Image (tube, rainbow, N blue to C red; front, side, top):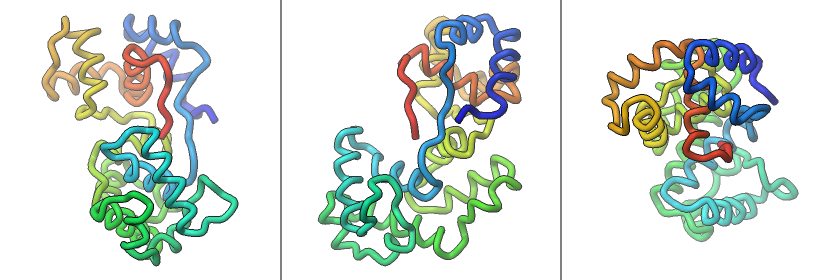
Length: 211
């Protein structure tokens, strides 16, 4: 599903920024795509931390099987995971720390501390704060979630190495900019900094990543 703001964002950014205008023309008819439910998306993000995509998928498949989400290789029920023993999580290939992160995430959903039904009424920073209350979810993971799952239009992940490298190469003569420089430069992209970021990533990797 294309985010509802995408076409307007593309028109606006293409008018304001010649670098983005070129990237938009180079990569037409593609856009950010949401994948999975909120809990599953966050759980997959934790599983995938600091390991390869292939290894993460293997662990994920074993985790889903171990929690008896029979017949659905995608959705992971929070209530089941909250009851899953740490020893079981270790047997599927998760470290003890990641197992605890997943259980903490599950408890946040089961208790209602994380409630997707109220997220549309929350501003970006408030939702990021709520998400980072979970052990194992840092600001970068929360920002990726807001961009790719919540489809928030104006996220600028200044801590992202890819964004730093793209901005250095395309706007700062190869010198990685300071965080303050990134924010100042990105003011011209508001309220569509998520879209600008996504196109700058395309300059490094033409194949879109889904979270």
